[in-house]
Amino acid sequence: MQFEFYDTLQREIVSFNPIEAKRAGLYSCGPTVYDYAHIGNLRTYLFVDILKRTLSAGGYTVKHVMNITDVGHLVSDGDTGEDKMEKGSRLAKQSAWEIAKRFESHFFEDLDHLNIIHPEIICRATEHIAEQIEYIVDLERKGFTYINDDGVYFDTSKIDQYGYLARLNVEGLQAGKRVSYVQKRNITDFALWKFSGATTRQMEWHSPWGIGFPGWHIECSAMAEKYLGPLFDIHVGGEDHIPVHHSNEIAQTQGRHGTQLANYWMHGYFLQIDNEKVAKSGKSLTLATVIEAGFDPLSYRYLVLTAHYRSRLNFSWSSITAAQNTLKKLRKMLGNWEHGGVVDTAYVKKFHDFIDIDLNTPRALALMWDMLGGTLPTSVKRANVIYSDQIFGLQLDRLEKTDEVIPEHILTIAEERKAIRQEKDWATSDILRDKISELGFVIEDEKEGYTVRKK
Ligand code: AMP
Ligand code: ZN
Image (cartoon, rainbow, N blue to C red; front, side):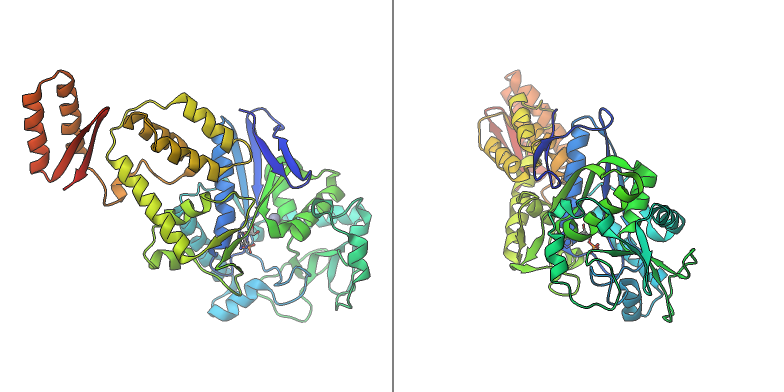
């Protein structure tokens, strides 16, 4: 399988060529655990999950690393404002450390609800302070830093083509520079280490520059490098990370190693709610709220699959209701169809034509529904859907979770009856039909097989 993905760095769909054959090193920026993740955040993790499943289906061994930002970065991208962890701690009246643990476990519950495969390596910023300090020491030695009253800063003017990922117009930004309380040399410079100063902080560490805490961007460069090396295959995150966070991760790695950190940079587009921007401090919705409203969380997964990851998706109660109904319909169909069919190779090929070229889940879903409306035997239709579900991840092979379930003992009688009908033993076939009926189910014969449903 030759994958093609949209690379934000090159601004086009390109062939994916891994560093090592059949292996993919993948880093995704993880959650900041000062609050619940919102369903917008979860859309990005679903996109990463589809990417991983696609690579795995193509025979790749994926090493997926994700960080947990459990040390406060600041509420603005510009290194100003209140520290997010300290703010979460103040609001919840718990320590910053407790807040981090609490929201990290909520986050993993959300992933499980959405059937998102966990990363192979999960790394917390607070557990990698030494690596971050070592990184900054190296950048300092190589001449990429300066110190001001606020902390140790990265001098972005030392990097050729700083901000290329975002096609930043640094000169234009510089001209529009407003006075800020930190004395930055260039508007795009950012903190590597912040001094605690007079503020008492719950999370702070000793460093060669004094007591303080790491800047937001350094944790990703330091941990990605530790687990995947200074140049790996794919780095992913949400589209908001393009102009600041990922541009800075690249700058740090260019400074330390002269590499662009990852060969391919992929970004998931934002979810909107009722056509408004989603933010933790604004219009927001958690998965728990969606579940409390009576939705199967996998309906949200289905909804996300209906949009290409590089298009904005709008969430509304009516769109998730439609997704839930469609998913129910699919489950109901599958529950009635016999197991053991063999996939149709023509379908599988078309499916991969959509998925392997930049993860086109909406086209792949449409293909599946077309196939379901066609004339293939139901057992083959079922096998095709289950095949597609390795990528879709809707747990369609676990129908016992739904109320549409057909118990195993009914299916056994149905299978027995099917075999008997092939031998044209109509009398026994009728006896078995009555037996199924007595047990509360109806069996209907079709050209190829049968369907069973509850009375
Ligand atoms: P955060 O916890 O704020 O660091 O965000 C975690 C991930 O969610 C990042 O990859 C963000 O880019 C992504 N993200 C934030 N808001 C949205 C949104 N509305 N839709 C999709 N992804 C988002
Ligand atoms: Zn990151």
